[in-house]
Length: 333
Image (cartoon, rainbow, N blue to C red; front, side, top):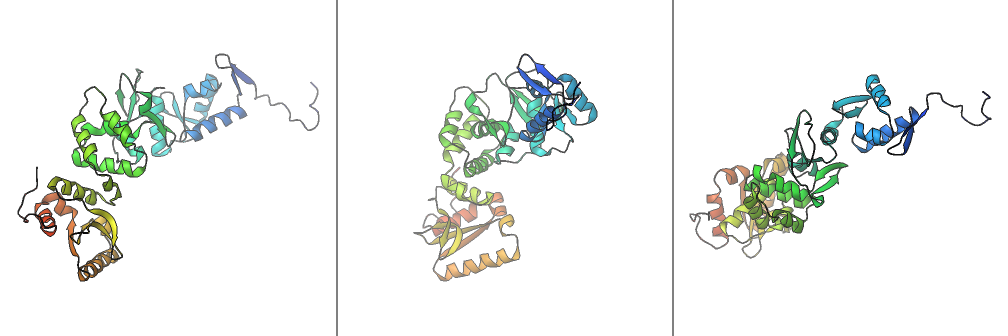
């Protein structure tokens, strides 16, 4: 066999091409396969599925060679990490979705964590419409139908929409937890309130339906301006007590305050340790109280512990400061 003309690469005997007739795709057994596997893994947080590699024209024998050599590390049946198992939280989520089948999407608490609206410490949760194999360590939800509008991709992972995620979480959370989650969802900029109400009003019963509908309709958009869960709780207590809702996180006399009723010249500050947990913040808060008091404002301060354990006395003070009933008046149930 004669040598190739000058300037052209010598043929690589290991670069024999494999054709997958059903897909009409060809890749080489070495360089092109490596490039294809790496590109797919980079798009999927370091993980790939056997069915995806076959669809790209990579033969089963080559896949098995890569597994034996340690280049593909098995995570689930038919799902591999590229090179090592340290794939991170999103890699683990993507692997669970791939292992659950082509109709699977991240859902429930795992979806809420991916959207950044609630934490999750349990098993990875996945919803699918078909499939029989159950991946180890995955909390699998099987459903008859998953409308296309309930499915999207976030952070390059197939996932239930943020509105469907809220609905799926309804049965697990009480009203306050739902309110916090809805506030975070709205703050994220990904939530569509009309779409959420459409999802919630679909026919068919599901656990927690009434509760999440009530909370979704009661959550004031101004709650998204709050900076801590304690502030969210205080707004909810104001609504429950039938008090006029304040302005939230506004400047008063050049000081940023949590809640302000301009007509009554009343300011309420909710002190959460995570937001006021250092000495400079402590000093600034009290300096602000002194200046506002000198300027003619009444300043009431409350902690998360008070709102959590027995909010009635404090809410009575707020009512009194607003010119309403006495502090002994009980909150509406």
